[in-house]
Image (tube, rainbow, N blue to C red; front, side, top):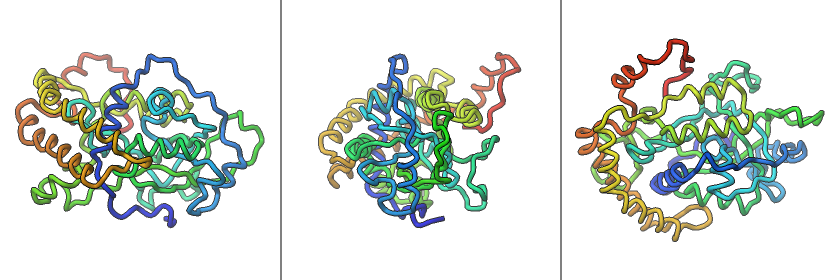
Amino acid sequence: MTRAEEPPQGRRGSLASHALYETEAAELTDLSVDCSFNCVETTSQRLWSAKNDSEYGPSVPDTVLYLAYGSNMCAQTFLGMRKIKPLSQMNVYVPSLRLTFSLPGVAYMEPCFANVDYRDADAERPDGSPSKHWDGCLVGVVYEVTKSDWRNIMRTEGGGASYQEIVVPCVPLPSSATGGATLPGTFMARTLHAPRTPDHKRPGNCGWWDRLTTGPYRPRDDYAQPSQRYVNLLRTGAQEHGLPRVYKDYLDSIQPYTPTHTGQKIGKFVFLVCFGPLFLFMLRVAALFADETGQTPKLLSGLMTAMSNMMWITYDYVLKPVFGDGERTDATDYAKGESTKTVGEKKPLLDG
């Protein structure tokens, strides 16, 4: 693992602002609106300029190479909601990372959002090349954007408060339009990453003060399932960019969070009545005071974290016991519904 790939130590700020931004984007993105990418593939010269593992490699001379792996792969989110206009793009394979859904969202609505985590060193392919059979590595899209648009990405993602910026090596997956241009075996691109939850910060392992003022953290990073709406953004983005079939099959196999009984629907209604106005208030205040990197004043960030944690504490101790799971599909009820479907459906590559 190179210097640029070293996992960041700790997280600045909290995840609260990211939950706000991503929930708004997921809820307001309309896939029925016609919106499409029309930029060219990134030139070999630009990729070669980012070949070296240097602090400024992905940002020389005046543009940034940004790796998107979640909803930003989708045109309606990236172009429509975030108003970003990429100069060029390149599909990539990232041997050192894997896709996760470990960022807490909003119970019963958007339980979690996409994140990346580092793969074990011994799990990486020695040659760093993509396989015809998906091996668990991240596949995404690298956009070339202006520095102004990069700051806008950071701001609308809550980057300074939720994520840390990392630089990772990417293997280009060019289309036939690239022609005979020689591309580097790997090049460096920036992306956003929220480090794994420390064990001592997880609910049950920390005191009430930490539970209220840090995070929000969930007991398990791999428990929550993304909403159907959010998964569709990733699937649509993969289709728009023509990502490898094996990776699209993986995205198609992800089981989204599906309410299976009336109690969960009532729980969503109660949650919205209790916390909807507070949620909207936090969203507007965060947008008003966030700087160009998404960083909010320390006091405001602390208040947002406390309010977000209060929502999750209420969910854990009141809503979930009464109304049911708001993060993961009830396997028993879901199996009953699935039993009526035809037998010939595709077997999931990986459970959500």
